[in-house]
Length: 304
Image (tube, rainbow, N blue to C red):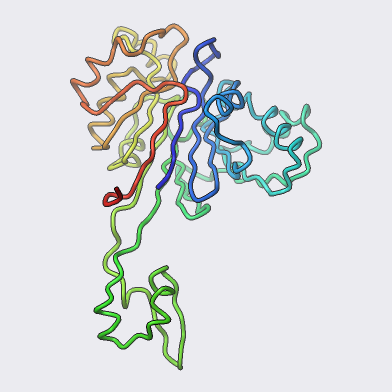
């Protein structure tokens, strides 16, 4: 199970009722933050979640509404006497951009580990899940992210008994580990069935619709996608500035056959996104407008 919270769903500038772009994902005691717009710390406080477990921060790109909250967050972490390393992931130029922002946060009691994304797509193994960055189409280098939590097959006790595998080894094999005992090697595939469906989350913003989004979002349990403009008559502006309309996001969700769509990254002029949802749900029924603090738990299919 993972917890997901859309901390901020605004684009361009913070508003009294809408913080700038940020998403937090919590899993197994660690937290992943994607983007860190102005107001992210306040949004965390409003949600009641802590910044302390954050061990990875990813950036889609380096426009101010996606990274302007980082220096303050780093200072807060430092003032809380954090000593654990912090991993930052982002497009080319990551260390240079963050180094410039750290002029106002020069001394920190923890190490920052930089991982710049190489090429159009790259996968990272982090804290028990897989994170894949994929290039999208904005007016600067920009990436979307897919997080996947894999799940092993069911443990088959009858197979274990038939192969005379000692009972004391069952739990080790069930966890996916290989072990040697009494001169014999035991592997997980001896007792586990085929892999079961895991959990998949895809997040993308500041982009035109692309095939890379449809491919990487395919089958996602939750697809969080930018919807800069609700009014379909704003499509020409969306094309010009390389953003999306609500309807374009809905068509992507339909194409990728995701389970659920949340819209985010609204234009400051979009005051009531819910007014445009009828056209969206006509295209993709299980869609809703994101809002600050909107959260959910994504569970494995057979979990209660």
